[in-house]
Amino acid sequence: MSKRNGATKNTPKSESVKPEGMWGNNTGISMGMMPGREVFGPLFFITVAPVFVMLVWFTNYHLQGSFMALGNSILDDGFIATLTKATPSPFTAKAWKIIFTYMGVQLLLMRFIPGKEFIGPTSS
Image (cartoon, rainbow, N blue to C red; front, side, top):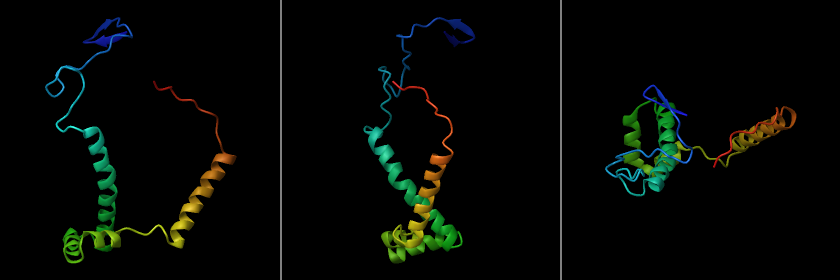
């Protein structure tokens, strides 16, 4: 049963509601404004978001929040050199200690405090 405009109506499960007029087509498939957005949009955000976060953290922590200093650093040293300064290396002893400590705590929690098994809804 579905409820539209306050009225209750029986809708068969095989009937699917297709949105009308999605970006000028009537197929019900959203094409958006850019072809290939199912691939390039997520790839853009996967690659840009971590870089942006690291640069904002670097600006706030090391440059006292000055985006002008960040811009000057990029212009003087280059983008890659500034990004290398802003990104901590995962190959230091401290980084591996943090990673292995986190792994150990999580394994202990899974082993000794497992909780009851939960089965979520199945996907089709």
